[in-house]
Structure formats: C-alpha cells, structure tokens
Length: 328
Image 1 (cartoon, one colour):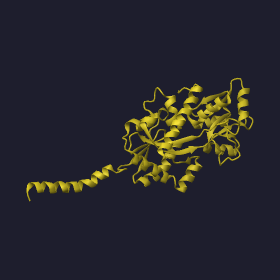
Image 2 (tube, helix red, strand yellow):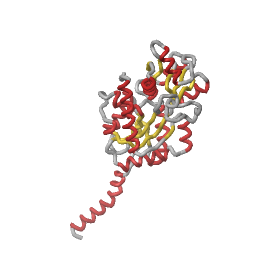
Image 3 (cartoon, rainbow, N blue to C red):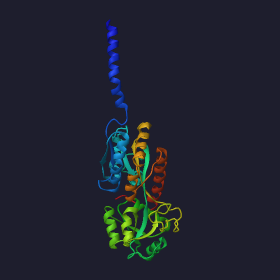
Image 4 (spheres, rainbow, N blue to C red):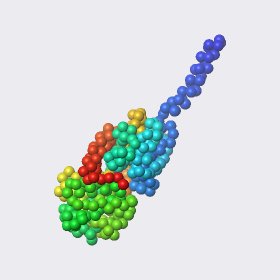
C-alpha cells in the first residue's frame, strides 16, 4: 500500500471515530439545563420552577437545574439570559408579566436589553387568578361599587395594599382606579406577606390577591371576596362576579408566566423545550399540585406567546403612563 492509500485509510478511520462525537456535540441537550428564576428562592415563581423542572428534565434526558438570580424587579436574571447565556437552549428564563411586559416601561431608561429583540418566546406556562378582596371591618359592602363609594367617601381616598410596584396586585388596582375613576392610594410593602398581614390587621382595607393566598382568609371570613379580576369567574368561587360583570366593562387582569431563551436559539431547540414543558405539565398529579397552589398551567406556540407579550406590554404601558407610576 502506497503512502496515499495509507493516508486515505487513516482519514477514513478518523472520520468514523470522530463522527459520533461531533453529532453528540450538536445534539440538544448535551449538558444540564439551567432554568433561570429572576426572583428569590421560596417564592411562587421558584415553587413553580422546582415543580416543573424534574418532568422537563425527564422529557429532555438531561437534568434541569433551577438557578435563582434575583434583583432589580427580575431584570438581573432576564438580562443574564438575554445577553450573556449562549443561544443554544441550555439556559431558559421563567419570567412573568412584570419581567416581560411591565419592566420595559417601568424601567425603560435602566433596562439594558430589549425583551422582544433579545429573548425568544418558547411557550406560555401559567396563569394566576386574582380577586379583589376587602377587610370587611374597614370597607363595608359587597361590591365593586361599594369599594368605589368608600374611596369617594374618604377625603384622602382609600388605601390599598401592594406587595411592590409593578406587580399584578399593584397594576390591577391602578387599572381599576383608572377605569372607575376611583381614589385608590397604594401603600407599598416589601413583599406579599407584609401586605396581607396589614390587610388582615385593618391597616389597609382592600387589595387584589391571588387565589391561593386569598383562599384561607376568605374561608375564615377574615377577608371578603368582591370580584374576580379575570374575564371569567373563578371555579373555586363561582358565586363571586367578575369586575367586568360588576360594571367595569372590559376589565380583565390575570397573572401569567412563560418560558423564553436567548434570541438566535435554533427553532428545533425551542420546539424541543416547549414539548418538554407540555409533557411535564400533562402529569395529573403535577397539575393538581399546581392548581392547589393557585397555578393553572397552559401551553402555547412561540408565536402566540410573542403576541401575548406584545399586547400586554402595550396595555400596561398605557396604565403606567396614565397613572404616572414611577419605579422606586
């Protein structure tokens, strides 16, 4: 065999041994996946992430590790995915209404990335019901009209509890104030726990509260349900009308979350992540666990989620500007 034939045989052998390794490098996923939670451990988003991570990992064949990167109203974690993580699908952001639709207006001078250009939608992941609730010892009455009347009767308006600026709790009330022309004054707390405690203690009289948090206090009678914030009544509280049914036409507010990756991630990878999420939340026991925690799982196409983010961004931009809301 001459030198040319020896070289050709060596190259063929090298190609044979190298090809599987090269294919393995291209295969997704080829390493553990990080699910970025832009809020502290122990909160609702963290609970949701840790609930779905095992099932997604099983579907993908790689471990999904929850990575908490809190700070700056979710912008630290979101910026990491949008600008620093590789666009290969191995880093996923679990963001919410604030992350995707509120921060671009609330922090338009501080936010250093563009949600709609730097993040690629994967799927809508969850929705959260909210209720308008009152402390009946502070705000008498049983309807939205009664809450508006209580605000009108007070020289300084009616105080309401807000876990922080830009949350669903806060912006839902600001939308109600705008639509009902009611004098509703935000008392801002450092988190939901202190806000609820002051509502129960009578320091404030009203707030929008998520279904799971509200449930025990409504059942005990310490809080009174006034109206559901969404477009339809809440199955758990079928007797409670919606805000829209109560006279504020078109009112429809719900919390929501979804998965995104860095823009430029290949479409097949995005589809694989979406399929893994859909498979994870199809498990009946997980659906029940999340529903008991007030989380209704949903799925969508990337295009549907992109359209939702865009519509919500416009809607909340209008509320923030109309109400003169400023970041702290």
